[in-house]
Length: 99
Image 1 (cartoon, helix red, strand yellow):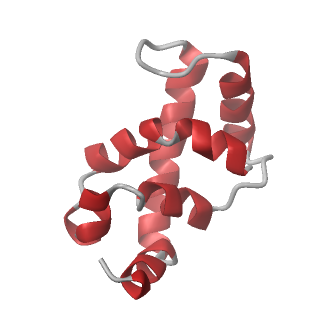
Image 2: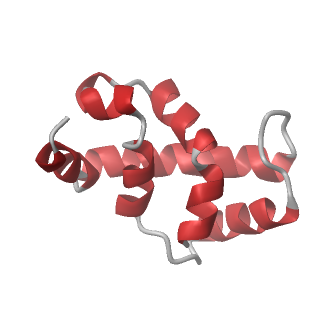
């Protein structure tokens, strides 16, 4: 995917919304202590701040972390909600450090 395509996708409101919804779902799993999720205290703190909308991470920054996945970046329109949710979980530690 060309850089302009990544830039365009990262700034697309619908794609940003899908990425944020996946991040909110991951936050709920973290808070619940679900298996397979980072349930450390810093992770829970980030999850609470994300759900309260009280952190400084933007939807575009979340989308950029999702676009690190070459499959998603290669065809944003074909990416499934599960693809995006998987990438959010993979990039969770990096999202925590971006805020």
